[in-house]
Length: 471
Image (tube, rainbow, N blue to C red):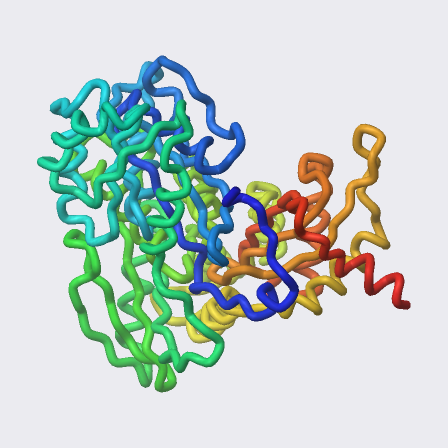
């Protein structure tokens, strides 16, 4: 089974994946079996499967390990569905985010129903997506139905593979084809050019984002030029600071959902979200003279959901510095965004440039944190110490146990703990482990992805236990 993480010690220690865990995203119209396919590939029931269209709304992901490669399989909502709770736009945003971040796309169609107009709409939408695409003719239950799937060739999107979730047909072929289309791994010995840091300047309207970007253009030793962004509806500002090159993405200011009444407002929201997704660090701007709004909370949630490093930037501080201590705003932010307690806070005056240089230096540090890796040996020592200091509670008469841990990716730092029963580790205990990692490792201010996976039957590694017995 592809889900078995049966890594040997040598393979785990020598594994050097791409910067981020590759994303394999499932798309298609409603009721073609996307969620069933997701569960089938994952080897466990994770997504809700129902005959009613529109059950899946948010993206659902699951970590896979196949042919010595990690990747995340991602389920999305049906393209073209009119949501019964008026959440069509939100579902659509989730689908587009999945397409934008995908490394491989699985375009699912239904052999029994054949090509329908909505399949053609999905194919049209994927026409200009420059990523590997597999067209999966689902519900092709036996070879006699194979000719029925031939008509999907006219969609012209990706390699056609006939599969059947119900009959467990061609699952391994599908996994082989997925792995064969993942982006190449970056080895430890490969010479990689110093990456360009992209910074998204986010926030609601009139918090001083554009003024901040203009200040970057006017600061000493900064050279600025406007270049087209990677998407057709944004412009990036490239600048140099102390001999290093950066890109600032000035995102549109957002309104509350009730105020989004025009196409321009609607696409502004999409632009801002897309900018957050492709940025390395987000600077979330607040107006020191204004209260935190619902739009601020929505933006912060989106940044957190995308696992993006973030700095809370309280702008226009010169207007209140004489009447309000910084501690007051710090408490205000911490109380409002309790799940983002690790996010640094900066106080600046964008118009004059006060504290801007220090903010940019901290932004560089955040970027470096997101790129850092910890060795398997060091991580195992830390996990062993954390478990000893605060053991997980007994679950259904069994002691939860972690056998070993490893970091499989960066941007964001992604950690996998191989254990005997993942469900025994409560959300509270997982938060405890994340707190330990933040306190003890070199990426304490950036989001961390944590996976707990059950050990495969043929995997007898127990690094935590073996080392403790040796002592």
